[in-house]
Length: 559
Image 1 (cartoon, rainbow, N blue to C red):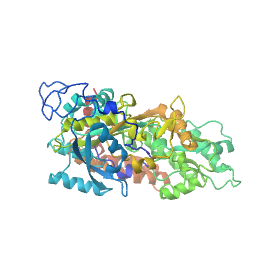
Image 2 (cartoon, rainbow, N blue to C red):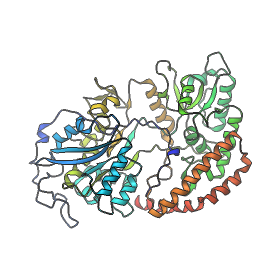
Image 3 (tube, rainbow, N blue to C red):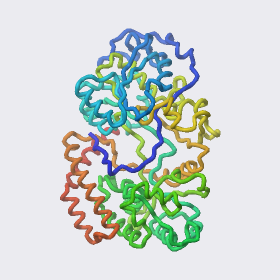
Image 4 (tube, helix red, strand yellow):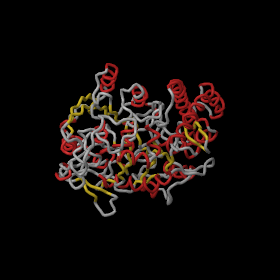
């Protein structure tokens, strides 16, 4: 099982990703066409023998023919609804899916955090629906538990025979296949895989006005160049308000933003700053590398000279954001979209990944774009072939969409009805009235971050200058240097996970505490060797072995 992500390690990442949307003009000829192929009789579920790929249950049309079923059926679905959000049965996407597929839906929805409790009660008590479509921290644990028990169906053969979109995706992306393959070699859950233009690897941005005001003509590319710029920010009237003493050269909230994603990698050469990575083919723990000491020396220098916000380790996100919006901060660890669009008219620049005296490679972490275990078909489902065909529609590309329904539709709605490209290059899009944003989509058309599916949409939203700045800067300054760290979707045995979680939690707690103390000077960097000794005594060598074993399995699954 995959290690549970630590809440404290989570980066405050704004991912405005909506998973379902949809409305569009029906193509009645396609919807009603059930005669292009004659389904042969077969069992209600595919056998493990030599049945052909065109074998279908009697009520299910051949792959590629719609509606999916000849006579209407009903699938029950468990999901999580946003508190106060629209019931899924009222959403346009499910209404239109029923028209396209001939499948009706009954929903068992829980709001917010109550979903996990209700889902667990249902699974333990045996009173669960046909499909479970959801996202929570126990998804992988559920998959490894209820898959081998038979509660979740093995989807491997169903995908091979009846889900061409999912099958093509797994052939194209071995990392996705490896991520959704359980320890017993079977596939029980479907993923959500996405790529958008608005995600970013790190959050080190600053106003070009500040750079111009202090006479800097080149965006820093090394830690020394960044230091020189920050010194000027402190000593000169960088924000141009006439007061040379009210600037905070570098500001953030805690370690989990720009410090973790920009400063630490500049010294270690690892994309992951506070966790595990792969360096020169070996699994490493970034906070235990010798180069980490050089980062601590550098960060302590910034702090002691007043270049790093003295409140970085104690201020809340709200307090820090207020400083950024007030124009007090030079390098800030957020998206430029945080700023007030009414007053921000100058170019917001992204720092590229930096190099240093201990690292000559530019690296920035590849944004997380894969969530496994987002959809399950249970053993209660009497129509698993129809169910997998339905879910396969969520993985369609725009080129093979049905009635315009694809993963892209799930994100934005229907092209030409809810949104449109602004130019022939298709690098920006805009909403079509009355839709003004994802909030409108969520109210009547889709649900957000809940369902399985596939999205590859790299156009940025038009009409938002700050967002356009961000997309342009990320594409030019960050994306060329994206690097994956230790695979977060690698699978662990029950024993590895149980022991590894304990060690990793203890390590992270100690590392974040000591890193902060080193930076603010409460503990001298001369104590670095003692710090390493404590990491080893806490169980780092044992955890490295666990990580190596899981990586070996991952690499084998990727072949």
